[in-house]
Length: 154
Image 1 (tube, rainbow, N blue to C red):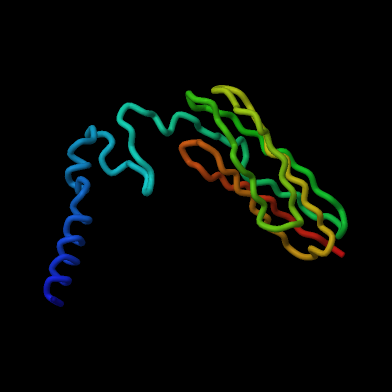
Image 2 (image 1 turned 45 degrees about the horizontal axis):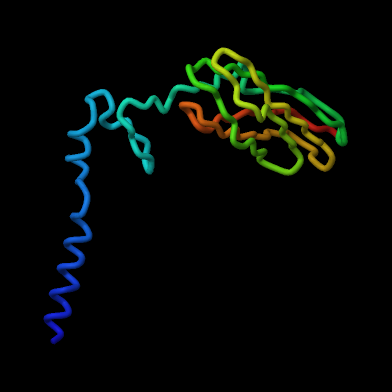
């Protein structure tokens, strides 16, 4: 009886692992220019251009120099959608609570500009500062990093 149970468990394992195409078969079905380019965990749809939106930042780093503790620093990071599809920003996340981002929530058409405004509150942040803001979007590079640097003096 034990052998029969093991046999059926093995048979179930083998059939479960062979229900779909293997990676070699999937690669053979792709156009040559797509092999090895599909993102991990995402399906490749032949003929679809997943990298059609491009977020191009004018300057991804801003040095605010020296400020007195308690001052607020504001900066607008400007960018352009240089792709061929609308750019949609899904989230903007700062590396800490002292930095607050605001961003364009409407889709940005190809050729149009958008911005991410960052406000850094220097209260309690004495010393050299490097704050990172992550912009998540449907662009070819889904995460874009923006850097805010400077020094807070007492």
